[in-house]
Length: 76
Image (cartoon, rainbow, N blue to C red; front, side, top):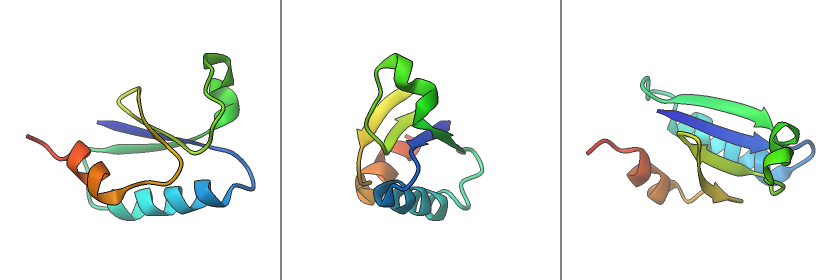
């Protein structure tokens, strides 16, 4: 599973979500976390950061609800 977080510079919410994701996914070996600058996807119409994608599908914008995210990535 790939989890991609699109961020921008000087964004406290982006930094907060990045930190949360790194903590949550620290021991989840089957999940790849990618952190990308939102500039690379603006051509696709994504202009809000942070933007979180799971396997190339938009999951959420803004702050992360850890409980819902954990449910989403849990197998089964």
